[in-house]
Amino acid sequence: MLRKMLIYTFRAKVGVLMNFRRFKIGYRTLKTAVGASIAMLIAMFLNLDYYSSAFILTVLCIQPTKRKSLRAVYSRIIASIIGVGFAFVFFEGIAYHPLVFGLILILFIPTLVSLRFQDGFVSSVVILLHLFDAKDMSWSLLWNEVQLMIVGFGVALLVNLYMPSIEKDLKKYRLDLESLYSKIFHEITSYLRNGESDWDGKELVEASEVIEKGKALAYQDVENHLNRRQNLHYLYFDMREQQFEIIERVLPKITALPVNISHCYIVADFMEELANHVHSGNTAHKFISKLDEVKEDFAKMPLPKDHENFLAMAALYQFIEEMEQYLRIKRSFVGFNMKKKTASKE
Image 1 (cartoon, rainbow, N blue to C red):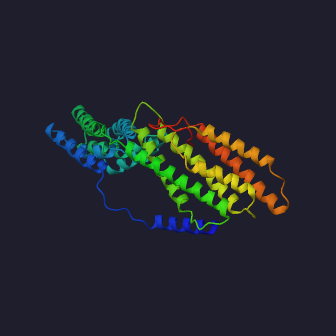
Image 2 (tube, one colour):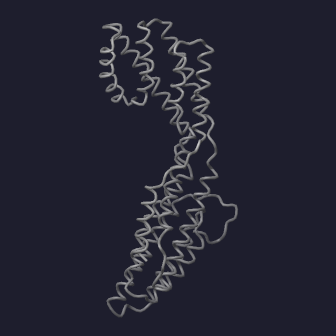
Image 3 (cartoon, one colour):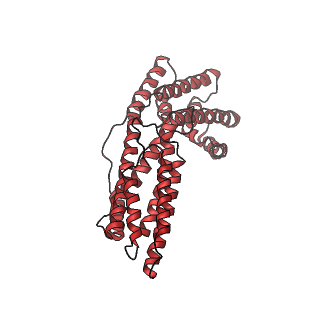
């Protein structure tokens, strides 16, 4: 079984590397196109010089989340202010010359990096190019640049206020992951009872992918709510990720059992019940109590007769200790409010 699992995992990873993304026009692409066009139209209406730059400034500030968009605008405003300062010192102090522009960049880029405003470099260069092209730092030109930034950055922020709800996707990932965990536990149950299995371990690969996608999407949801740093979905996938590490650790212990002893059936019964009750709520304490009963049953059973039985019993003890940690991780999670609660859910 372990060999099949490794082969499937390798093939799955190769498949991911060779997988090409299909052509798709997403909501962010549409927002960027619409927002940038609106910004340029507004700049044209205001009769601003270099009005097409409003298009570029908007494109640079439309980000995947609201919080990232705010950070992008802040970074670009500060970088542009610093850039104007450099332009005043070097263009007005030396000359409006390409070599002077190059000298500005030599000093300007490290300054932004040291101040951690490097994300605003491109937009600030746009402003610098306007100043260089005009060869004059008049108040009217500076006011023109301020208006361009207000239009470009402002439209980007307004457009980014709309973020489609991802609650449905998060719920789907959550339910898919619970289904995969349930299947994995059923396979463990089958192996404990029969001593063999033709399981290829594909659910392990799928579970890992769902955790990664779910956690990334949950973090995106956090970033779209400016008044909070984390949410229940993110905590959920983080909790499941910790549990998954335990699942990966215990599988070799089960597949390496030298013999099938009577203890296996006790653990199998427990795992079957757990597999049938993988859930988003939090009643892990019930299964911790059941695991204590398993330990008590172990204590009542006779000592191993030979070395192989001893190794098998030791492996099962390690297994139930790991599963107890699995349940303790779940118990630390606050849990979702489920519409239908039952008396025994993981």
